[in-house]
Image (cartoon, rainbow, N blue to C red; front, side, top):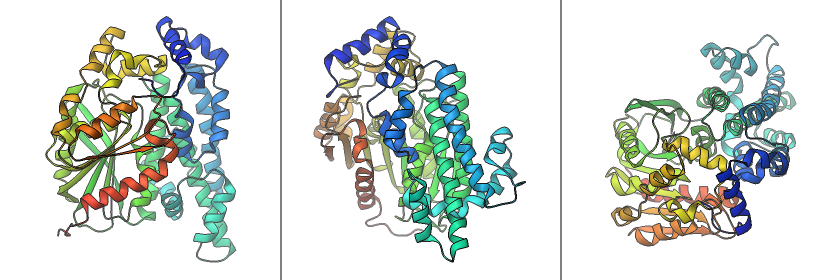
Length: 456
């Protein structure tokens, strides 16, 4: 699945370590980061508002992928952010008030509600500005937003610091969970999801609109995610967003909060085969998306004639596939989507062992030959011409994880597609993340809300 600017020598070395199962041995000398996708740092730095250089330095200290070392290392960093959130909370309430640490020790809804109420005033700061790399930046934004004197400003700054630390804890626990498939990683995933449940509880009272959990039973699994709707009770256009190989609903939803006043709802769900799903992913997993879309079409807040879809990385694959097969979709966005070449044998040179293991877990493959067969069955080449709805295809022009040519081919063959390749950028154009998010939202508004009439 590697292409682009990665040198042939490095690709062959990565494949050699994968085939001989010596990645762990090599990682103890070269560092785990050497065996991770090039966008790994930028991806999680964006998610948590972490300085990329700081995160790169933290990654450089990770020297193992084993559960006991990888997870323990990142869990400890995440715990420092939980402690930072609690320190900020102690500035806001009586020392006996609930803490984030206490929530992790005992998952109690009353604690979630109490903490959510404390954090709610800073929700607009997170939604409008995202997490920040420095406390100075948080304090500056709090001064701009505070409605009152010094005491009010200091209180809002403390609240914003707690929310910011919470987002960073969510992010670091998700790094610990990467790429899933083992007990310690699943515990980290569960912790990240529980913390996001707390964050979501603070967002609804603090923002216009509402955020609600969704749970859709499908074929013995339960699709879990979050739905964010504009203020009011009227029906609105909705965009279904889905993640990549080991992404999460929280990673999708946090950066989309700033678009909450566009008149569109957002539903974030995790891709089949990841984390909490029991069944592996295959071409037949499209049934899951069909049933989720039908569930949304019956939701009282959803305008069933105005449903769009956005997918990132492997989620982009599903967005493109559903654009070809689901008649309810009005438009779709596919960012960094593998579609055909990525699934062929030549596309496998340079895949790190940790990604191969994730693909085994996701697809249920038992060996490399089985994995190759399962991936080939995912090809979308025969479906391109069936994508007749508007399709926005996004990627970097030097994707080192999947074939950039997949994006080009998809845009060329789908009748109503347009292509945006960002120059000198990698998988999913993470170097232009905010730019393409803005472009994507404008494009979705044009296709979903331009001629919308409000429904009672």
